[in-house]
Image (cartoon, rainbow, N blue to C red):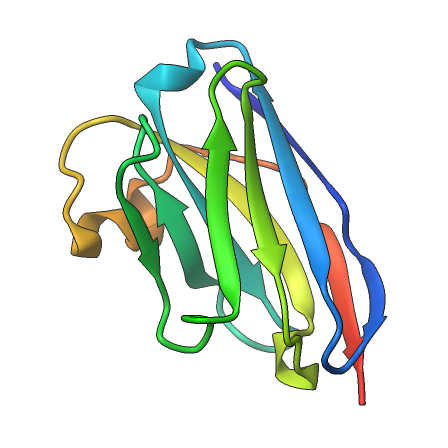
Length: 128
């Protein structure tokens, strides 16, 4: 089992920045590909960003490219999502997900169904 705990959400004005963190435990962190997803009210959960087990490969949804950066620190068992130039449409609950390494194509890394472990989510609200 893998336990994931997100933190760092909050209320920010449009154009502002936030950094989300997700701490993992229960399994060697380097065995896990990690992703961030979000779910706005009334909408399905959607892919935001993902990072390979060693941090060498990153993947982003088109809607956040150039504004968000995903990174990981395997020594701290933590993955981060640095969010800049935030927009009201970024408002959502952000979830951290983990999946075992393997099949690390861009399509696979964005596939919600392939993520086995999830955190409880952290709310991000961007005011206009």
